[in-house]
Image 1 (cartoon, rainbow, N blue to C red):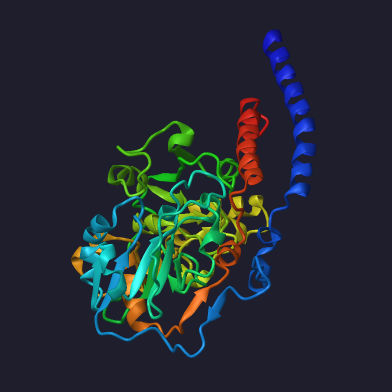
Image 2 (cartoon, rainbow, N blue to C red; image 1 turned 120 degrees about the vertical axis):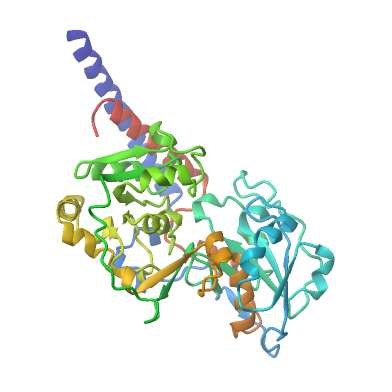
Length: 434
């Protein structure tokens, strides 16, 4: 016991010395490479956020006298880059079930020879850079050599800023539309899209969701070093709820594929829980991924960590946001009361009488041909080309637009500090200091 006590003392001394060394280094690096102040604004300042472009002008330039984009009954859409690592020809095949259910007439192709006859050319952000693991790389796939004046070049992105390592300036002055999870995109492409139920679709039956669950809370995380420091938040929530920890970060894999969020085997395990900690890995504007939507699908209450999400893009009263509370203790007491109160718990499912949703690339929705337009890339861009009355424009400062966000970007200092914070947390955990 004496030896153990001596070791713990030595560990604590080492940690203290480490902190003394690291904190001044961290302060100096932050002074040398200050991050954008936007992500440190209080939540109530969201609407007052001052747009900070990398130049002094607006990111979009309207091309005067050119009218709107051409009107054709059938729109042709060319996928130029790979999409999510999938070759354009294969991606077109995968999207066929969705694109045939849109209610709009569009043709889709991966054949670059059809460039001049295409109404839109689609680029996927992550697949545009050939060395996307190299910070600030300017190496991108060869772009079309000709840009017809009425053709729309569209950049699609579903990744947070911190996961994008390329030099965005190489795309300044080239793109006409953005298509991302951000509500301020030219074309909004969320992970899930909400729909108001018609009177005919409303059901008035009652379900006791509380009694259908026999476990309390679960989280599943495989990205262990993230900008949102989810590991610290999970540790705090675990003081108030009994949280089961799944995923690579906790050494407990779930299902056959620990990386696949749609893995059904894992879903069968997780749907036994009343709460799901749907914590995002970044605090980016409107960044709401499959974590929230899959919790709804499993009839759970998602506990979320949103700081800068427009409430209009999610279902009202369907979630509990940690950052809606003044401190973690107040949140903890409330979440315990929800877990102990059957009526209060079930009230978080009243939204089912008013809303439904289509999940991003939900092939079940596509095959069943739901009355709601499927939420996939092909259908969204097809609908936009037919419906949107957007004047001809160009993102002359695309770099400024993509960086106009609250979350940390992928510079070397941010990456190093993110990794260091996780190492410090693990060291504290080992010494039972957390």
